[in-house]
Length: 130
Image: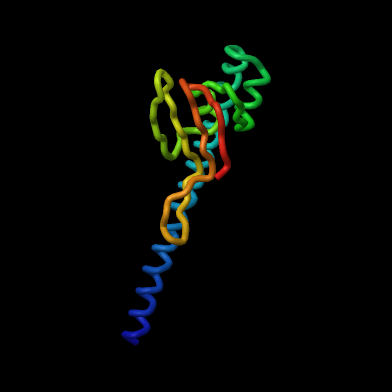
């Protein structure tokens, strides 16, 4: 009889913890959906502002995460986000930045990136899929 009571007690604890976890997961998923909706609204406002400052074609390219030669740094940040790593250098009067996106680890635990974008004086001059 004592074993049965012990079993029921632990089963009840387990069920209680499972219910709490599910409630936490549901609340977190709702918060994530709300944040994604807010992000989409903000991005739409930013794209509309880009079309007034630059033009509609550039705004559409930014919204599609496209990169082009001569792209200003601020539009690159809007299109691709903050880089995972940035390496700065200079040559004569030219400031050079290499922005790396899409960080991942190899089987040997080395850090690699999927995209390298090179900027000179805050304008895109090249990019390479790595």
